[in-house]
Amino acid sequence: MNRFWKTVVLSCAVWMSASAVHTVHASAYPAEQGVKIQVNDQLVQFPEARPFIDSDGQTLVPMRPVFEAMGYHLDWSLDNGQTTISAQDVKKRTMVVKTGAAEAQLDGKPVKLQSGAQMRQGTVYVPLRLVSETLGYIVQWDNDNGIAIIGQDGNYHAPAWYAQTQADKIAETAKSLTGIRYVWGGTTLSGFDCSGFVNFVFEQYGIDLPRTSRSMYDTVGQSVIGLQTGDLVFFNIGKVTTHVGIYLGDGQFVSATTSRGTKIDSIYSSYWSSKFIGAKRIL
Figure 1 (cartoon, rainbow, N blue to C red):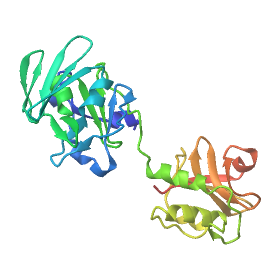
Figure 2 (figure 1 turned 180 degrees about the vertical axis):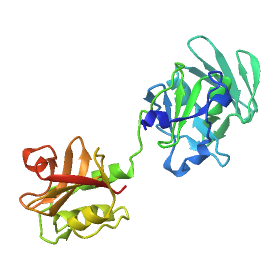
Figure 3 (figure 1 turned 30 degrees about the horizontal axis):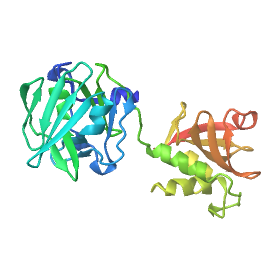
């Protein structure tokens, strides 16, 4: 499934009825991994304070960087310990919020809030619901990547950033080990044979594989035709399965070779394509 269509809608405000979409709460996302905010196709940069998910599953965002990314001009005032923020867009629509108040004003009209602005360690935070429920913008929540996407232009957008999958991490680890010499029976950084290399990489992620390439081919995973990052690719050198590598994507794989140690090759090269016998997916 395309990653964009795995994005689910947190709040559609005036754009769709609630019954027309599947809604989720940001609390489903592991808060410790951090939350990203995107306006249309661009990620919002947070040089200081960052968004977070509170104990009620509500996404709270530093007001200044988010609203400035949407093109708002902000004015601030402080009175008796209460901060008032006035945000005006290019169409002169003005929203006013006060820390500690459960009400905002939109073009002078009061708007009830489930929760209002709050001051935390010198930063004013507002609930992301303010953007959808008060200003009427589309807000999507991509749980896979922990991104709230504000469709200020009225459109739905794909994430501008994707979290690394386990397969991506395995591929990165495998690529980082290129150049290590070949050692028959080798399973350590001092030297690898082909199955020892594959075992070493996958062990870093708690995955145990059989010791030999033949056993891997015969006993683990699911045979696949369309290759994906992290798949095991197998080759016959001679009459039996004697070589295994890790597929990286774009036709490339990495393996421990007898001639040049751990290196990246093209599965479509004349040498390897003639010896390729199949792939297994174990992730």
